[in-house]
Amino acid sequence: MLPEERQELITHEIKKSKYCSIVDLSTRLNVSTATIRRDLQALSASNVIRLTRGGAAYVFANTVQEPAYTVKSALHLEEKERIGLAACRLVKPGETILLDTGTTVFQMTPGLREIQNLMVATNDVLIASELASCANVSLCVLGGLVRKGYYTTTGFWTQQALESMHVDRFFLSCDAVDISGGCSITNSEEILVKQLMLNACNECYLLADHTKFESVAFIRVCGVERLRGIITGRELSQKTRQEYEAMGVQMILV
Image (cartoon, rainbow, N blue to C red; front, side, top):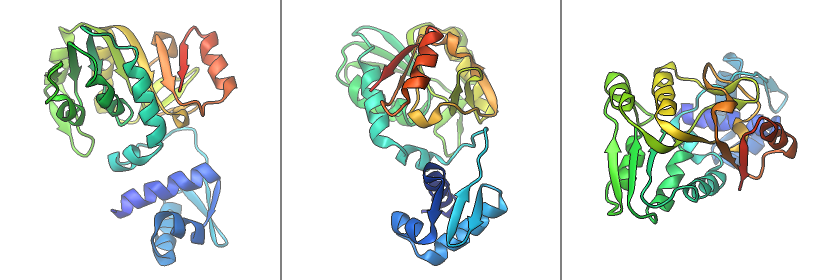
């Protein structure tokens, strides 16, 4: 594991628990306490965490940062699998769907293999790789520049394809979702692609694990009123669920 990936996991563990000891982190990540101390010092220098006696506490901030793809794919995996399966239940045979890039949307691929006569368009090369051999799927891969380390296409060619596209359903991903701030992401290169995807669909469903809620990222994709529904884990609080339902958003908790 690269130091950057390990530090992302350390940050996640501290954020989740509010405080972690060096010994606890060493056990969770299966590395030496000396390695944990070095990582904590690096994170402290970046003002991500605050060092305490024998451990570290999280420095709270409202704006999220984007972790490495390998880290994102490992976080809340079981919840993401549930979300992906639930999203597939909305897809009917013969439909045309558009899949956004992301580790949660990726979890739709096993379920899509079981649905007949699908047309699937995506700008995620990992999703495309999973579906390329499916006999029941006609696959359209949106061309463009591949964002290194994140397996997504962006830029002029991606945008050109989307401007003439129309689909039944779009499954969106984001880095953060807030009742007033809407859906937002950290990487500005992807913003126009996501907005063109929104323009191309009859219905949009957001796929997001429960940790994405009540936070904002660098740039706004759309307001929550633009969503037909949100599919998330049953870990989401009842209060948060009711707030979105009051906005007319269908909430599917799995």
